[in-house]
Length: 199
Image 1: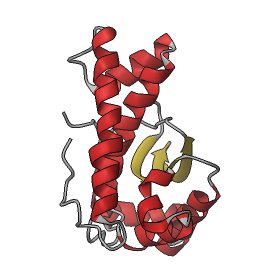
Image 2 (image 1 turned 120 degrees about the vertical axis):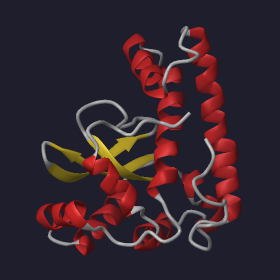
Image 3 (image 1 turned 180 degrees about the horizontal axis):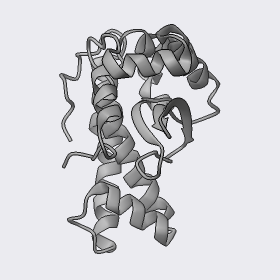
Image 4 (image 1 turned 30 degrees about the horizontal axis):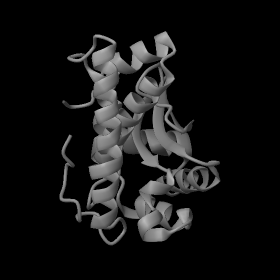
């Protein structure tokens, strides 16, 4: 899938070089491997969510990891925006109710991202009418299940290493401080189902 903005639109927080490598190489590799696995499973034309579910049910770990990573990355690109703005309406009210303030939520996202061991994802999510910050490890995903993802932050090293080397906190500060796409999160909160990978 194409990026929803130019590859240098998030600079200087996330450079064009990082986006070209992350999207153009890492994400593309996950998609290519998913397409190969889906064809072998007879799911070449299936939605990505169906491929993830089938791979999980069949215990096809490599197929699951690649499909889930393809989905997570697509969700991540949409979770970011050049001018992230601030939460409004029902989302702002839910953040105030469940975290006390946007500042408290932002601190929780940064803290969980910094403390997440090794590779994975940090999510703002909704379940049973309440917002929460969730973590998934490695290639796992919230694409399936009852927890609805609203936005995510990639904490794999390839998301920030070109720009920040091993300084994950600086990457998280930049992302949480101004790049989170609150409009995307609000749409997901209001939606009846889970976001579907376009393509």
